[in-house]
Length: 272
Image 1 (spheres, rainbow, N blue to C red):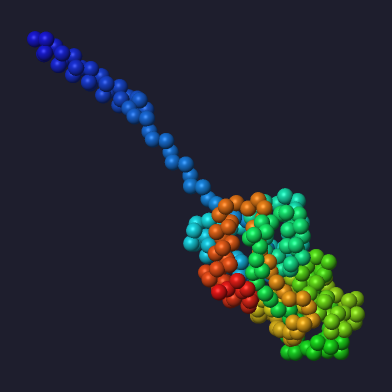
Image 2 (cartoon, one colour; image 1 turned 60 degrees about the vertical axis):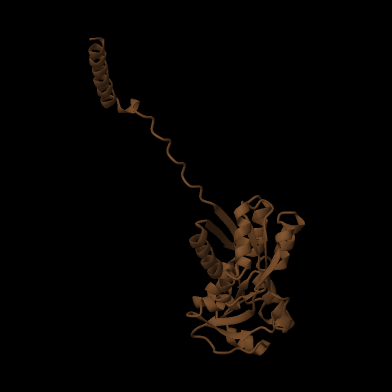
């Protein structure tokens, strides 16, 4: 009798509990906490404008390989260095001259042990595709091709390509004849744009830039190496670089990163 009463009470209680859980499902079981979204690493690179094509492709390949985003800001080297000095959150700096990197190093804003001479380049004279096929690097040759137009080049006060251009033109005794007929640009890519649009009949850019705009411009002369300082692209981690940036830097400097730069015409100084 006692067993039967207990069973009846238990059954009734079980029905009540089941009804209660059905009416208030939130009381049944506490759901497991939602998984936190995956943390996406974002590596920020400040790079010389002439690296846009090569570094853009390399960054895309790194994301495909690791899932890590790489954001790249392109501009003339020294203005980028000044932005880092002002506190811009960059992890890696790649300049187009030693001077910009030296500036940051002098202010302890890069990790000295990470600094490497990464790439080399050449300096060329370009014209729009409808322009001359060849221009002699003499006063007569250059001024004859310019006629009443201007020569595009990066501003020598802030753009490495412009500094190399001024040095080369000075060495060849051409600078004085063209210095009042210049279209100064804020980066080497801007100078290239003036030529590719046909806004200037000549421009001085890097070989890699000329290759990037081969449909709209043609190389009409190559400046001898002895007319300017060696064109070097130093690379380094900034003093505040996040840890994953070191892995990306090592990858860029190694055999997997090199082809992206060789494809655009850069010499890769770190290639084995």
